[in-house]
Image 1 (spheres, rainbow, N blue to C red):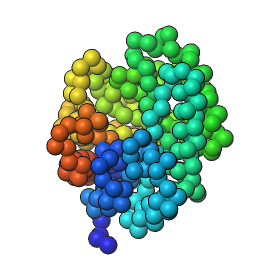
Image 2 (cartoon, one colour; image 1 turned 90 degrees about the vertical axis):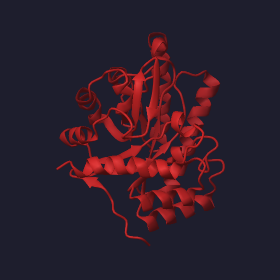
Image 3 (cartoon, rainbow, N blue to C red; image 1 turned 60 degrees about the horizontal axis):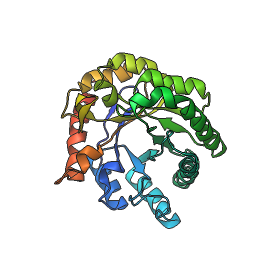
Length: 286
């Protein structure tokens, strides 16, 4: 077993990589790659078409993943799912089953400390006013299901979704007062809208249980997500602000589909590039 060098900043911040950006790799290869690069955490993607989609991620494969994670000294703090609050009742019922299936995967991976579940919320920014009441109703059902399953769902604002700002996200949390519903923070969506980094952290980090990180260029109507280090974000400033606001936990690279669906995308090279950019900045935070 190689001697891994784990990057961590004062205050307990660690780096991770979402396997959302490694769809083409077998799970064992993806985990080994992330550990060898130096990541401390991985997010496991349960989306359709992934080797860890619940219907194909067998009990035997889950046991093997648990053993490999332990051997590699990797944590899996979060599971990515793709569900929406802005759907009809049939699709909403399917989303509740997705939550139950994800919660079972979480228990199978770590019964003592199950990974949380992370998702965006759907819709479009312009439809917020007409859809927000229905979103509250559906989110309440998510919360009730999560509470029964003894899991936590971290919900994320997205520049292209109905919930695109800290204020809208907090409004939902206030309407659905449940400890099972928390925040997944991703500054890239706020940067595109000109929302101040410090202000977004001040508002959201008290409820944040999980962080995604990536870069971006453009504006809300026309944008491109990038790998960390390829855009405008100052990561020394970013990690300094996280420390200032008391965040402790994983900061996990999310490679956007805008990136990994491009011809020539190489997941291992991308993971290495992201780690280099983030670990270098993290090392400067004293």
